[in-house]
Picture 1 (cartoon, helix red, strand yellow):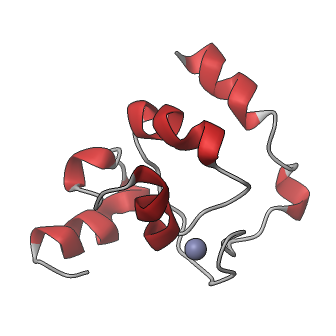
Picture 2: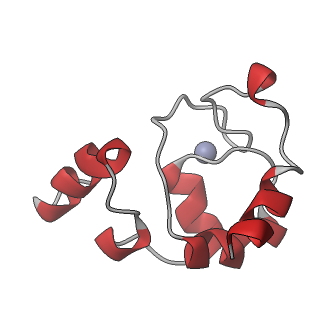
Length: 86
Ligand SMILES: [Zn+2]
């Protein structure tokens, strides 16, 4: 699975020109990590970087806590979701 993810990541622009703006709607978003299953399910439909709202549109459903990797970078998102924040 990691090799497959790395092959997909190689298709993205190099880190030096990556921004935190969504390539679909241009809003600035916080970095997050989604699970491999979610990532692979939308990758063919993904063009560049994606905010959470655009990610939900590509998924065709709302994100849930289980879609995020339990890692510190996601703690604010998970904390907010557990308390019903959008
Ligand atoms: Zn967006």
